[in-house]
Length: 130
Picture 1 (spheres, rainbow, N blue to C red):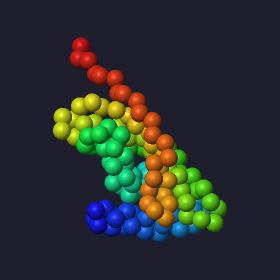
Picture 2 (cartoon, rainbow, N blue to C red):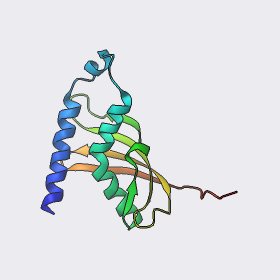
Picture 3 (cartoon, rainbow, N blue to C red):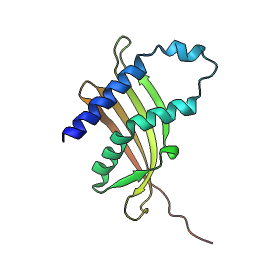
């Protein structure tokens, strides 16, 4: 349990530092790579995403970091460091790599860590061979 607390505190610290950078600096820079920014954010949120999936399904799930998409990042308080992130992931059963699904979750960072505000599940259609 102590490792989980350390991981959450580390995540909050990194998110705080990352989001405290003035967004105008990013807007003025011509070298900003949105894909790199999204990949960085997904990597930071990875533990929270997996925990949310495992809790929803009641079994170990995995998702491909490259297949995850950041749909929206919203700063809730103008002067604060409270953010809401909407992310969608394609995931599957960890043991069999089956039971594929696409899930969209809205995550928020608070002083207590990352919390799930909303979770939407869609079964992925089974591919049939011709």
